[in-house]
Amino acid sequence: MTTPLTGGCMCGAIRYTISVPITELRACHCTACQKASGAAGSVNAVIPATAFKLTQGTLKRYDSIADSGRTLYRCFCGDCGSPIYSQRATALDTLVVRAGSLDEAGDMKITANIWTRSARPWAYIDPASKQWPGQPDAPAAQK
Ligand SMILES: [Zn+2]
Ligand SMILES: [Zn+2]
Image (cartoon, rainbow, N blue to C red; front, side, top):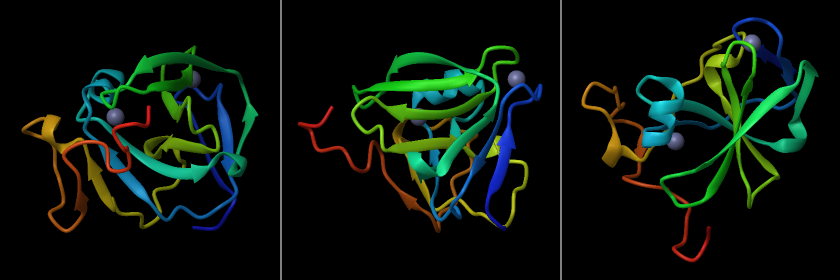
């Protein structure tokens, strides 16, 4: 895939670019992602916030308490409801972009599955991927 990558929401009101290649794709099986997607969870490209540029539209934000106990900003299109990215209140330098909002799939593969202990029984988890039962990078003190 050549950068910048482009993406947007279902109705087209939101458009964005990502200036870096995506190297990490994480599937999150937490209960909040299940509710927010109405599906197995979310699949996310983890990128530096500086690489993301909103080129059209205005995102709405919903502040949720993640299963990790941390506040997560969930940003989505207020017109069609498509989730676009989430961001930890304590790590504003990183964006977690919903991979399904990218225009092109490329040949990306899921590299890690997190919160597998709450995965739906019908969710697919590639046995070759890295797996964590909860949050992989959260020391107990960090919120
Ligand atoms: Zn939309
Ligand atoms: Zn999640």
